[in-house]
Amino acid sequence: MGAMLSSARNALRSTLLLGLLVCTTVWAQTGPRQLALTHVTVVNPSEASPHLDSTVLIANDRVVEVGPSKTVKIPRGALIVEASGKFLIPALWDMHVHTENAERDFPMFVANGVLGVRNMAGVAKDVFRWREETASGKMLGPQIVAAGPLIDGPEPAHPEHAIPVRNAAEARQAVQSLKAMGADFVKVYDGVPRDAYFAIAEESKKVGLPFVGHLPASVRVAEASDAGQRASAVLSTARTCLVVQLTRKKQSNRKPLAQM
Picture 1 (cartoon, rainbow, N blue to C red):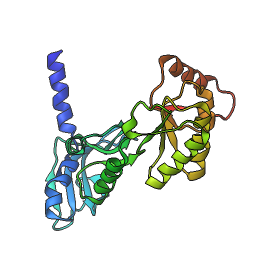
Picture 2: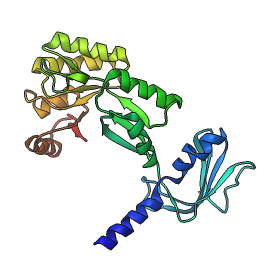
Picture 3: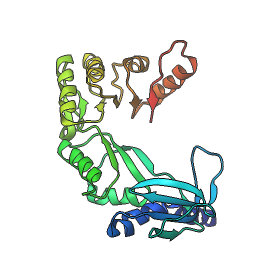
Picture 4: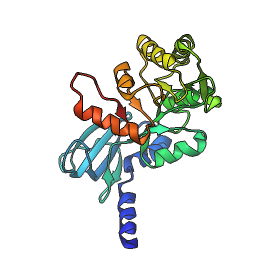
């Protein structure tokens, strides 16, 4: 068993995004150049088989050509990386993070090939600043899609990054506040009252923000699906089973609640 785990670890090491490491070190230091990764095995998740002995050309932060190494012409002056025995995969996304220490977490994301994250709640002044700084290149880190503060009930579980609401009017105001902050989506939490929940759903549609999050106990899974909740971050075992049942037995055009 130990030998198998060791072998698996070695295999994973050889698949760590070679192009990513080059782009974040050598390439970043030398300025904008063309980059050629030669003789690499390209793994495309949408296809059944990997592309062996491929060359990938990158220019201006974009992949401009992928093809067999024997046919791809490498431009003069390009930085060439011999990648025989290595694997190249698309960047990964982590769809549920709560970053508190960006200086520690962001380099770890990048080093492991995670170039996109969905921040599911955080302190607004930090989360949105990190989003801007990583987008501009000021800070090394993944692309960030962020909720900012979550919306919770009158006694929020995480008051440091929550907007408490007691009723529908406060819920609508909270959604408007998140829109003004620049949130990419709205996250609801366990303590949101029933009338406030449906007000959040309606107001989110009006301002053009998806809403996701937890499912308050007063709201049924089918109701959440009909209201337009895009995803549920946490569900009890019983409710998870109910989602599966709805998915299998739905008779209408209702879209079942996605789970992540």
